[in-house]
Amino acid sequence: MVVCTPIKKALGELRYLCNMNIGIVCYPTFGGSGVLATELGKALADKGHNIHFITYQQPVRLTGFSTNIFYHEVRVPTYPLFDYPPYESALASAMVDVIRNNHLDLLHVHYAIPHAAAAYMARQILKEEGILIPVITTLHGTDITLVGRDKTYAPVVAFSINQSDAITAVSHNLREVTYANFPITREIEVIHNFVDVARFSRKPIDAFRKVIAPNGERILLHASNFRKVKRVQDVIHIFRKVNGTLPSKLLLVGDGPERHMAEELCRELQICEDVRFLGKQQDMEDIFAVTDLFLLPSEYESFGLAALEAMAGGAAVVSSNAGGLPEVIEQGICGYMANVGDIDAMAAFAIDVLQEDERLKSFREAARKQAEKFDIHNIVPLYEQLYERIKQR
Image (cartoon, rainbow, N blue to C red; front, side, top):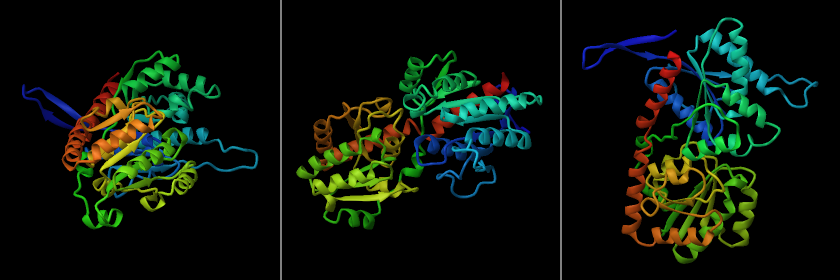
């Protein structure tokens, strides 16, 4: 059911601003796709839309209470017959149930695998009942660049994307990579990731900074899911070079398959006293506020949401120039980029930013200003406009 509030334009024309019932399907974890999907849903709910999250557990960023947000858990019963529980079938059934009983206007699925395929299945089931539900698919990165290119999944990924009513990508780079690797026949619209700048604009807590850097050392940060693509070993080698020149500390936020290797490397390089592993953290605002420099030397980033959030918190960035990062970072203004694996260059850039107080201040202020271009208030209306267009077709 659509609730409409009449508003008058300057010319006296009567139009209707419609609040929608929107289903959002995403992974509920710390990854960029889940973070973006959850923050988008929360922002839409704040604007009066009814948001229905459909996933296998409550998203980590879905905290607090909102009268416009609903969470529907996908249950996957286990049977001895199945070596691998059929999550895609359970997800499609959950979508059908939520759409039927909550009169959804559209379904927005984040990450192609398996969400786009499950959405297609759900739509075909509902079509038999005379219910037509538009589907929007947002591509986030590894669903295209890694998993989706696997021959096991590629045909289903391409078909599901092409069956969507609208397709968005979080960067121009990801859009081009998608066209280059899949037979996509539909237009892909770029809507960049966003950040709530106001949320991350916090004053640093002096006591917190003193605990980490008691002698005024520079604070460097890396946050990720510790997969190989993030090149956490490069982070540690870069820090070692910086640490040999400037008194500094390194914070490592997150967890994943490369964490054990990272801990071993810190011991080998004898820098453990200056490195802290903080594990997974849901609320990064206070950490970003005390960070001087964010390191992101990834093999590939479709966009670099973690870097954007760090910039909103006032941290300069040194990263690789892979994927969509050049769309986020202004070279030599709010940070620096170098080729993937060029540890020496990234370390030199980091030292250049950190060694003088005034220079660091300039980079940090520029980082905040650059983040404002991707502020939530600039990006979320683009999704609303897309929803309205799709509904009217």
